[in-house]
Structure formats: structure tokens, C-alpha cells
Image 1: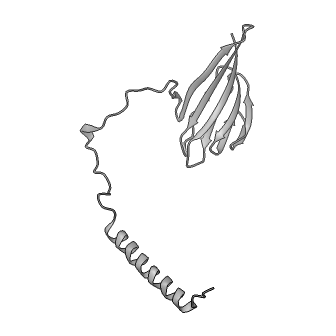
Image 2 (image 1 turned 60 degrees about the vertical axis):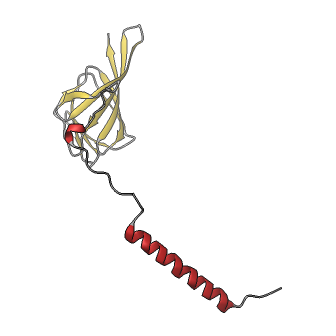
Image 3 (image 1 turned 90 degrees about the horizontal axis):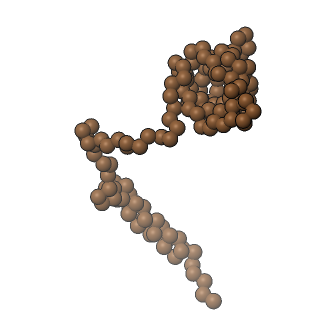
Length: 156
């Protein structure tokens, strides 16, 4: 069995390191061939999609957007509706109400809800309920939108 001297192995490793470093340095200095950022598209050539979302958000109150995801009736006089509410970052909604009793599930964002004299902290995972036609305001204290799922129960 032949033993390779340690000095020879060290010299080969140093030589390979120098070759690789010079190749990498050259690559970073010059970049890839034909690769670069694309030029900006002129405004006159911007093509927006003509497709509309199936269930778009609409303004429910100042600072508050809503959309209905599902609606059904039990046939015995109760209607159930599932809505999504969206509050922009750092926004506070104007006072508003919903047409029935509601259960709120906070999906994202952090803030507070004021309903009458009660103030509640809103964080992801929190659920709370409001009676029929109770007014409320929501303040989103996060730097990202607040998403709330609402289960709404009304009499037909």
C-alpha cells in the first residue's frame, strides 16, 4: 500500500483552491453571458388580465372590505353566510354592523375590536361573537392586512 505524502496532498488542495477562486472571481466580475435584468415595459404595452375573481372583495365600510364565500338556508327559517373581512395595514374601520349574529375568527393580523364599551384584542386564532346588528370598529395594528372569517346567522 502506497502512502501519499501529506505535503503533496496539501499542494494539490492549494492549487485547486486557487484555480476555483480565480474562476469564481471571474464569474462574479463579468456575470453570466446574456443574463441581466429585463427593461421596463412601457405603460402603453401593459396588458392587464380581463379575468375577474369569482368572489371579489367590495367595500363594506371605510377601511373594511368584505366578500361572501358561502350562503345557505336550513329551510326552517335560518340563513347561514360565510364572509371574509379584510382590513388594511395600520387602518381603523368606521363603525359598522352586520345583519345578523356573527362569530368572528381572526385569521391574520393583530389589532383591537371595539363594540359598545367592550374592547377585545385580536390575534390569529382568536374567536369571538357579536349579537345581531351590534356595531363595531376594528383597528389593525399590524404592518400586514388583517383577515377575518365571519360566520353570520340571520332569520329569514
